[in-house]
Amino acid sequence: MQKAALFATVFLFSATTVVFAKPNVRTMNGNEYGGKTELVTYSEDDREFTDGISEKVTSYDSKGQLVRVEVHATPDAAEREGWETKVTYHWGKTKIGEVYSTDSNSAVSGFYQMVDYLDHGGKLTKREFYVRPNSVIGTLGVYKRVVHYDVNGNQTNFEDLDQVGNPVTINLEDYRKAQKKVANGQQ
View: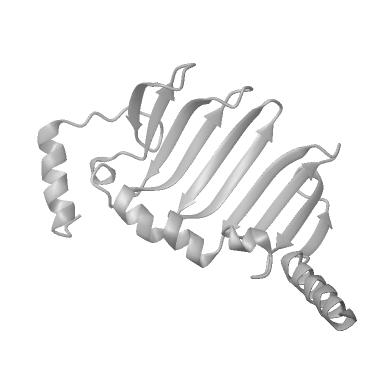
């Protein structure tokens, strides 16, 4: 009976050790915000790695306030979910979130980066899609598409802009021609 209890205790301890493995943590002082940056690298034994996160970089300002969080996906999660890196900026009560697509997801969606602007209540107010130059609308001069939302989270309007912020108007005929060119590999 004592051997069984001892075996169970040893098993529980070793299982707990694996489940609660400590990630590799490095702290660097003097970041671009005047504070410190913490870099956490997760191993396959960490819950975060199982959840699809390989690395997390957290930056604080000189007052110790959270400014920026950057999360890198594991290769499996990146392929499955279509993103490689997510960055969240904390500016007072507002947040700006950036998502960088994988190449394979970008080839399908037509954009390589998405930026969300959230108000102090966490509601989406604006979303920007940065367009791949070789996508259909990219070949028509669109650099980014900006989508605006109302207080209820409903899309109100969108605009296509070139690299310097000028509106780009796309007519259906030009769009169809660009679709054919992109489908045929001509750009």
